[in-house]
Image (cartoon, rainbow, N blue to C red; front, side, top):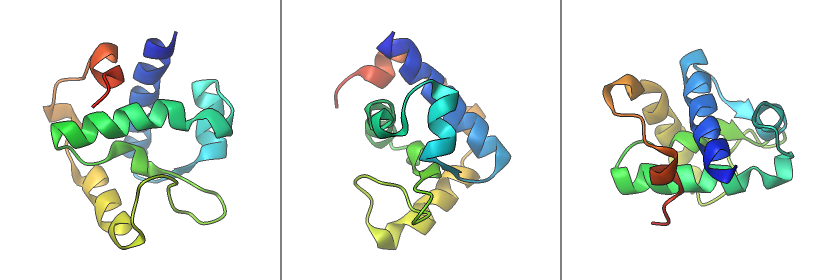
Length: 106
């Protein structure tokens, strides 16, 4: 179940990038079928995969409603630039990672 949900999270993130805008944790979590408080368990493996693969940090498009910034290991000074990289990156040019690849600890 966790592997499928991580893969679903990846697909939802790509769909959000296709819309060209960020989404709040509260809006994103129901699409994934989890509570907003538990969404990090699905975003972190994808963030780790992005970093290991040297791709833009896809989970950065999910933000706090209050601050409009992502939670997690992001420095304020890099958020805008990294978000722009995510939207500019052509995600169709890379092979979709398997659920197993997304779940692998890095």
